Length: 340
Image (tube, rainbow, N blue to C red):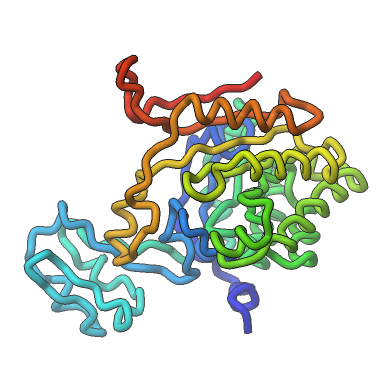
């Protein structure tokens, strides 16, 4: 049984509920980040979202060294060393007993199980913000289609409640799953990370043929069913990987030739390195830990290339942190966004 099939249950595993988001669709939104992903992108900024199962991590700056966690762990998965708490990932079952007992919240369990009723009730609390801003709820991840049945039922509940819904997806799912979910979303945010199939496999662990087929399917669904009514494409701009002229031109050509003018926005998302500590806390190595931020000039050049490659240049935007401009004294993490 696949991870996707295992996830078709009455409970969903949610990594985080982020309120007051303005980047995951129109208006003020509540974004529900589901655990589990069908890709393993080498640059992933949320490594804690890849596994479907809850995961434990240790935050050293909070630890008071009381060793309560070690004493209550039913699996003997925690060891105290000179450098702090060591989590034996083979022994840890993600039960959360140690996190509940920790008096300083130095241990956290990433991932919480929600019933359909409880999750729906939680996000509906924000209805007033949605109505005033034209916002709604976005399901993201990880990859929300990994928990396909639960996410479909969740979106149906929101749809019946009159709440605007959005799907943020990498596109790596079955056509059947995609078709079912599309009937319950008002918009789709779809990642095209890499246009070359071999490079896509190298960077994410999977080729991109199914992803591109599913993106075309979204476009066709919009034309036939008039739903979803908006499609945003997102491309992460990663140094040493996707940050190439040929990649951007290739994606632009695909958008122009295959998606029937259904794309209303194409976002180029600049690389950031703020996730380094996440990898350390999860005991993982990050191949991009020494990669530097890109410059504003480079992002603007790529944006111009993108605009030149599509029929509607006004859909192209870029955003993200850029590298310090020593001469101008700009902040290293100055947040910049440009559009025509």
